[in-house]
Length: 420
Image 1: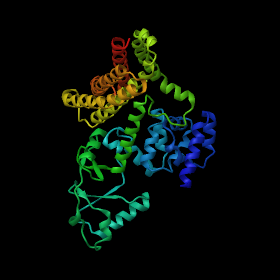
Image 2: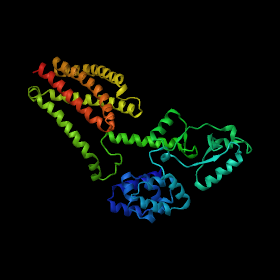
Image 3: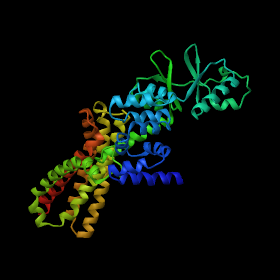
Image 4: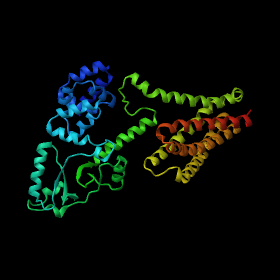
């Protein structure tokens, strides 16, 4: 706990400093501390430090890390020649593994895989396997996965705990557990689907000739899904993925101003609808009290629908070809929720303002706006996806605009007809 708190304090210190001061603080840390702190820093700051340190500093830093982490960091260094020079200067053991991992695209199965495994044969005894495991652990500091190979072909896994439960002369053949596999070039989404439909704790990555390249563990997929979820959350809010809570103001402004300008434009569109009914509002100022309720309820309902649709799109459960039932269900749900909330707000208006007609107007407006929220909340993300854009990024702005515009038009239009 103290170590985690100490890391957090140093991350905050580095994140809040100016670039020159940040580099000076980072260089003042012990080399081992720099090695383990760098991967935890926000991506933008991590890249800045990586490309500010000299080659000797980077090589010393990378020597403390495991090959997977070192590879990830090297990929963030600018310049292919500089990356090659750093890899050439690493210690032989780590260099060979890093060079191997750098051959693969980071968004493929090979880019996600781990090299912590050893190959055994079905005829190997538990005594022989234990000796191989011990040698691997001394060399890497990790207990390896035991992959069983017969005639060059993967047959499965030998669970490591079985070595402690059976005699030294027991052979691996009796305890082989099947494992799923895929080829190195498969996209990361294929890897995620394989884990989702086959809930194993690992998947073997194969080369085109069926030889083993590496292993993907469930922890790797959890980390990948966490990054994707974080990205979706950032996109949904109009914030770039790399932004961190400790980024300086300039970086935050650069990340968000475009989305705020777009939101400003849609806000003016909603305001233009209100301006059409300026005379009505002037004659019945009470309408202004209920306008935020209409807009807010529509926006909240649309956000609920959007969240469900984006999840369905991400899981490839829905697209424009099969969306009719989903949209119909969202519209029906909006209608029922609109009636429930419409009755409540109508009763409040009748009791509070002693005006049954106002209650009717606000109640009907609530029903209409929640139906609109269900329709556009379901349709817009699908259309945006068809256009090749990220629905989590852009849909919320257009959906909120639709509920504001139609909600205000319905509410103020009915008020103009029935109350003025």
